[in-house]
Every structure is written in structure tokens, then in C-alpha cells.
Length: 155
Length: 204
Image: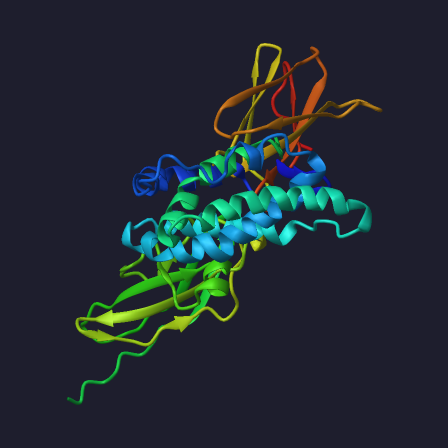
């Protein structure tokens, strides 16, 4: 059981454990999101992502989640008493990040750019919202992210 | 007010076997008093992004014994920092922190227990239930020169599994080891056990 994001292989993460951690937070996290007309991880970001693109895209998304979303959601995690599940998710995202080695070779430039455009769609939508609302929405959309990641998980 | 400060717990260490992790320390002794302890942890995320944040252990905040089952707290294969302090009424000791962060990939994996039975000519194995983290790699063969070794992955312990239909009069042997997905490691093989359809379990 491992992730295979195109050329990037990630072992040592059990997807079921990530799902269990998010399920424990899902209701309370998504209940805080009042903006139902916007989806940050929308079709244009995640649909029809090629294998080759997937490593670049997951790397950019997880980096953003760790550096921006989780960091700014932490106080809410304490407030909602979901710190343990929050920690499980964050630490497993760190494991995945540490094992992703997206290639920087020149031939991959167009694929890298394609993945980058997808990520920028997500980040632009994030920035168009009020900061706290954006963090809350992005955290609530972790199930969308996990569902997409599941496509690259091999039992 | 002359109240002696409470000494901090010493000699913290983690014993981990088959993905069960126990933090232990030397007890703080105050004659005729009951000391309580609180355990907290930090994963790599917390130490990298918010080092001031420590998370209370699931089962030991507080606890009386000088040990704490931290298995439910260690939920990623990253280094975890752990700390303990003692409390007596309003007195609280300083925190003692585990010298080296603990990573679950260092757990000791032991060969699993197994029970080999015969149901008529059927060879049945029942493996020790070690929890959802464990899979089992079962090797079995007919004991004769040049015999082919068969392999079966068993996803869960605690339930009988049919291995094969045995040949009357031939000895059939089995050995097994565990595999832990989250840390990508396996245990050593168990002892080999052989059975004969009519006979008893043969000594090696």
C-alpha cells in the first residue's frame, strides 16, 4: 500500500488512517464554512490530472496546506478539541511531503507549468476570500483532496 | 513558603513492541503522598510549524503510574517529542523531555503467534490478532525434497484461514511473519510448524 503520484512513490502512509482522522473532524470543520457557493478544489484544479502532473500538483497543494491552511487553522483545532486528529493529518502530510521528489528536469517544464496553473487556480480562489473564511473552507475540503489522492493509492 | 519544589520525573524512555508504544519514567517519590503525572507529545509538524504547541496524551493527562501507553498518540511515521511532569496538589514539577524523539519505525517486531489445525484434509491457520496495522506473510509447503513453497498474504489476524488441502500421509509445514504497512517493515519468521494428516504436530 503506497501512493504513486506518477514517478513519485510514497510509502509508509496508510490512507485509511488519514480518512479516519479527517472523519473525526469533518462535521465540525465543514459546519464552520458558510460560503457554499465557492469550492476551492474545484473541477478545473483536480480533474484529468495526468500521472506526470500529479507529483507537482500534490507537492504544491500539501506545501500550501501545511504552511498556510493548517498553520492558520490550529487555534480552531484547539478550540474545537480536534487537536489529536488534526495532528495525525498534519504529521502524515509531512511524511508524504518528505517523500515527494518532483523532477526539476527541463523536459518536464510544460508538465510542471500545467500543474502550476492548476495550483494557481486554487490559490487565487483562496485569496479572493476573507482569510479566515478561506482557511476554514480549505480545511473543510480536505475530503476532496483525500478523494483525489485515493486515485493514486495502490493497495 | 518553604515548600520544596517537586522534582521532575527522570529516566524517560519508550519501549515499543509490535506497534504498541509505552513511555516509562522513574517515579517521583514523596512519602505518604500520591503523585500524578501529565504526558504531552509533539509530532514533527508541531515541532516544525508551532513548537510552542504540545498535545496532551490521550490516556495520561493525568495518570498515577510511572508509565503511559502512547500508542494512540503516535499516528504518523515521524519523530515525536514526549514530555512528562509531576503534580502534587498545587505543586507542579518542571517538564522532563525524552532525550531522543521517538519514531514508530523503530518498534520491535516479533514473529507472530499462530495456531495450526486440521479440518479433515484441510490445513487451517489462525494468526495472532495484532491489530489493523499488521498483515501476515504465510509460507507453507509439503515436506518433501524439492517441494514448492506457497505464499499467502493474510490481511487480518484472529480468524481461521484455509491454506490448502493436504495429501494423506505427507507432512505439511508452515511458517509466518508479520508486515506493518505504516512503517514498511516485517518481523522475522516464526518457528516452522508441521502437521501430518493422521499424525500429531511433528517436532522439527
